[in-house]
Length: 235
Image 1: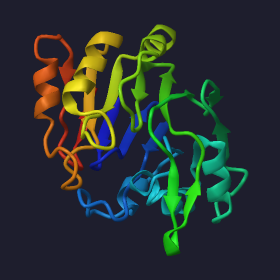
Image 2: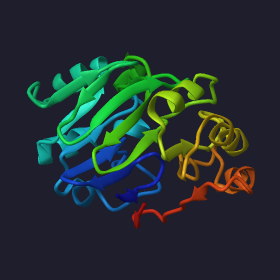
Image 3: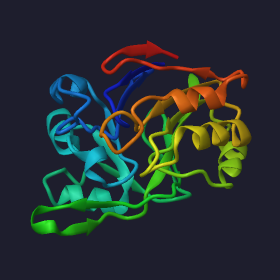
Image 4: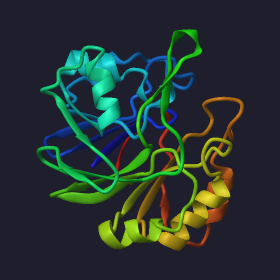
């Protein structure tokens, strides 16, 4: 599996024939100034955990160029269809559901957060419940992108049901759990082999580095992967 980080919670995952963008915050992202065209090259799927602008700004452009399949909750799918995405290219679901994406499956799981999109004039459009995504691949380890969330005890059930080996974990505090709590979640509820922190260093209001997360994982035996922004690593 190849993984590329574009800052914040935006990732490109390549495995088998699937080329996936998760939460493609590629427009207006202070951490990523490389545009959306490069990350969109060859993309087969766009997956969205929730509707905040720092997770979906860039999704319309990527979907328009690539013709990729959109995997998101029903409300986000309908919102983007209303803005030009083909209704033949959506694969909606909701918490507890699993969808076949062609080459892999995606299960929608709980996240403790919110989900809306701010439009002109200060109007916020409700975009369903936030979630995490558990991706099962036929020839690769199961990956869990937590989305934006705090720790919650049902993470133990997610581990029991799905046994993810790769975790993408928000650690920036204020809008998600902070690094120390995120490390506790990984140690207490999961048996990850590799974790990739995200949702830090993007804005002044959130933690600038993964130091607290790294310290909290010390001695756990879990591999901490820290790609540079725009760097592709193999997991």
